[in-house]
Length: 150
Image (cartoon, rainbow, N blue to C red; front, side, top):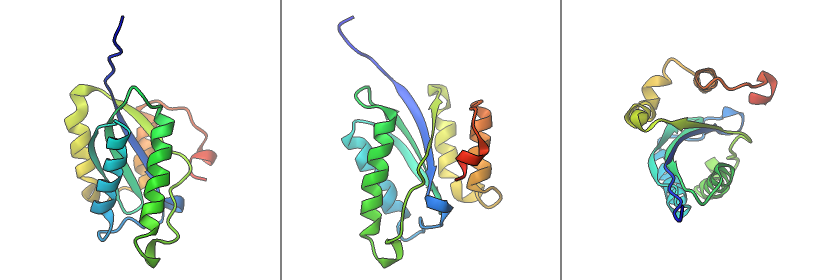
């Protein structure tokens, strides 16, 4: 086969270190656009990026040219440096060490987009910990609780 054809939708999520509420209304939209630019530069077409005060969600097409781990590394390192330059308020900003990465069926893209768009409403009643635990359960991911929330 002379051609490599790939279409992998991924839903990524990770939180700020210690789930501190750094992602406020002053910075959120600009942060999401910046992260979208990182994804575009890595040929990982972003479909939607959003989140809440202490975490982020990225729905994108993973490029056939990059490993998921490398995409996460690039997004976290560049966006962390960028946000720290946005003022004293953000100088202690860090992302958590880990992440969640989940495959998305193409027929479920709109559902995931709606979910990400509705983060503020969703988090009136659910914490990121609740949300992330639900993803791990939905995708039947084996994990050790003591390492997930460290």
